[in-house]
Length: 441
Image (cartoon, rainbow, N blue to C red; front, top):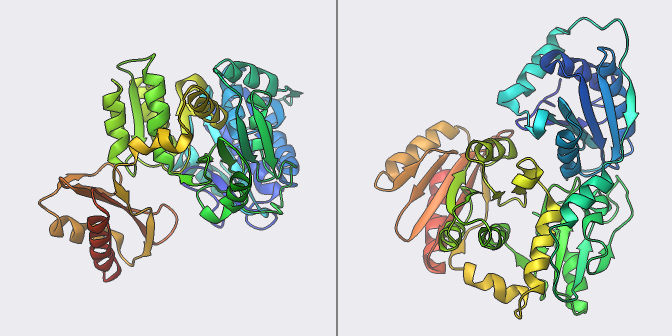
């Protein structure tokens, strides 16, 4: 299986580790696991997404399941369709920001509840490895088509409240943001970048977490008079933002800004943020009358925690923004709309609106290769035993003037460090101190 069954999805190189035959068997395994009678399947623009759809659908309809083909769409649209169409399951065919040769499947149960390694992906792997499939039905299921885009656009467009004209650069990265952005395409003036669907990603990787992928949008903003820029990833479940100067806005600052806005009409609501986020996010939620909640990193974890507390909104440092309005799932178009609303209703530019949240100094996420992650975490626990220690995801250590988190990668022999302090000097000193400990282990 060459390791295609991941912590949050199934992903591999098409024609090598992920083949049409494998997709057919995964379709059979999904039915065997879930017993699903109605399955929504969407896909991105990669040239092999169509044959993978055909193979998946063949595997599912073998058992009499109805497959609803929603065609080319964003991942948030597939979540929306899952709930709207009353499906038992949904599958989005995409490899997100991975390069063109990659593809994969994001799988959900009913109500867009994601399946992760711990809640079904490992079971799917076992079923495929052991060929432990349910017996076929006596009659094949049908494949029907449904255009989900008008429903999605109509639902989320209702949240627009643009008070004065805006000019916005939107980098679609030749990917599914082109469809996702139909929510707001006529609401303000857009200068598009790379707005032709092309699964080979001819201009740059579709990953707003990588600053090098934002260079074109930065140049565009700096060359004109724009209010901000929005930059989508490959399947448009993540979005990054630049201010009117072309400066990158940290994604946790966007979480704080949207949370503050939503809490004006929803005082006392639960808001989640992942534990890599700045102290400023928690403070902003409290200041706006909300209830802050830390989450583990990863969409499956944060969505589960949101459901438990009926949370209104959540944000991750990776640019995922989750809304109760989309079954606790991402809607990057709605995140863009809220930022547009905020800017259009203010007499300040976006850089000044965000500035009050930029209170601390962050290291950014730093990866290090380690031989024995559990040994390292034990070493850190002993060294920083006088801290307030949290074990939500890896280990987090908090002091009055600084904090850090170290957690293991799900897929590589890496640990990831995030650290923040009240001063730049302390951030740099503590960062170097901890990296020395990590890299000498």
